[in-house]
Length: 110
Length: 119
Image 1 (cartoon, each protein chain N blue to C red):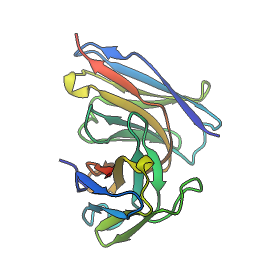
Image 2 (tube, rainbow over the protein chains, first blue to last red):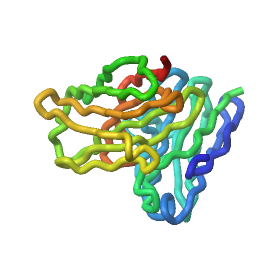
Image 3 (cartoon, each protein chain N blue to C red):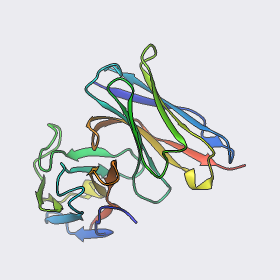
Image 4 (cartoon, rainbow over the protein chains, first blue to last red):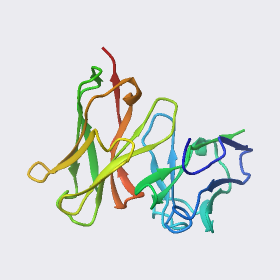
């Protein structure tokens, strides 16, 4: 059971938009920055979003994110088949004094 | 460009110690600004934080693993290492090393190594 809650899977057609939610509490998302990672099949996770809504320079602006209270959301527009991957949210948890992750969401581009 | 290269055995016997090393190029483990982190992923499951080394001998470990984990740095070799003692089949996972600007913001990752615990 992960500390952060994500939907197990989401799907959408190519060119469409999808959102992935990440729910936590005041000991984690509510008071700390959220990061999002993309893990393509058989590869290491890649940092997609940091500090709630910032993108590393190499990440296209089709990827965006936001945070409100104890929840965060990742959005992907103009879906491509190459976006099929597992997506994880992560943050610090002050109660556990550890980094915590969501269980991951598998994105299928139909 | 920072690169992290992992090494170590892919098979460990139950009750023994898992040891992995992450060699850093394009950056220095001596830098006090980064979190040198280990994360693992059991087959078909999600990511689990193991721990990190930060800024001159400051370490933090996952409470569920704390009694069995040690993360250390070798500045001469520009490496950081993970030791996990008394392993069981539940420790079978792909192990990743990573560099973080913040504890939960890992921007460079190693290639990952599958470590199987089996006799």
